[in-house]
Image 1: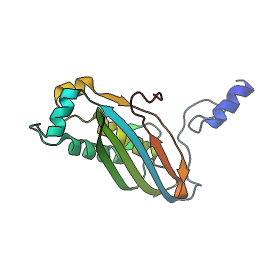
Image 2: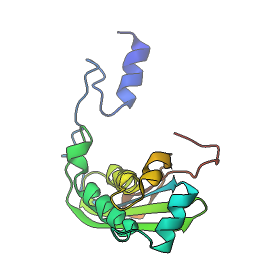
Image 3: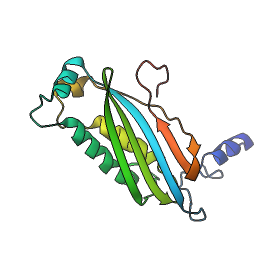
Image 4: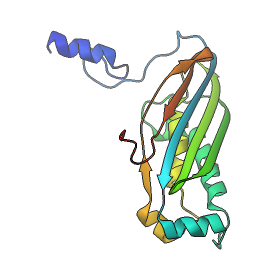
Length: 173
């Protein structure tokens, strides 16, 4: 292995710099602190399906509330879904789904007191909220577009924010 590849691997926390094998990061020496992550996303939905959802014309009830519940549940199960993700004591999850042009904006806020952050939990909540279609018309599932971007920043108590851009913003996956 070259010196340059070892140096690159050393920057990737989930890859052992010597062997190149994946590993779970050891956070046992890190102090537990209050942490919060916010992730945002957007789902674009076909116009006809969007009219049905907004008119409340679906027989199965409000798909937005079902989607919110799915996102909350997903945040709590992130370590079972994402390889090498630490299981964390989630203290709060809030998922909001707001009408936006051509679809809905989604925001997930996750909080914990732990030795590592909850960015993956917030992103998972947004992704699963966008994917949930139990009450949506079939045409919405066939034509939905979910956009993604990770934009991390920190604030007091090691809080992080990640966001998923709207279509046409020029910043894609």
